[in-house]
Length: 239
Image 1: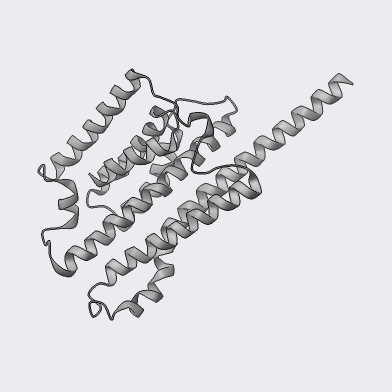
Image 2 (image 1 turned 180 degrees about the vertical axis):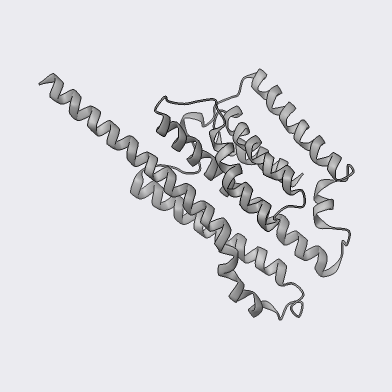
């Protein structure tokens, strides 16, 4: 009898693990597709706003509408995953409110400084937000570049969601529990990183391609804290 019960429990556990694995894969794929195709979904609506700027602000409105659509998509995904699946895609309960060891904080600080120095060296040590905004700080050029700035802020939410899903997916596949290996960073680099490199999403394409691995590392270093990871990744992405 005990063997039968153990067999049932084991079977149920394996089934649950497979379901979680499947959900993480679906979450990652949907997030990736949302990043790629949302900007195309809003394009038909952009010309409707030509009354503002006589069409010169189309890049800004495209970025703004993409941000809005992304936020809606994230809210829908969070709601469905929470109500239907009982899982959260934007938080880890076990790390909520948990303080990081001092040693870990110093490592994170060193990683942040190294990233900023590498990026700054490539732009002649200009202030990164000003470099991204461009040389013209007036009129439509400034407004359009501000739209890109806002879009990247929301994009970092997708990045953290994808990192969480990818890390858990690979760990489930390996079946050895949590790992300190940066699986998510590698997966992110080979998917979103390749896409950004192809379409030229960033001024420093190769650098940001490699930084995807660093994002995965930050997630591990922050003990898988979604909020801490988001703030640190956003800081690197923007500054």
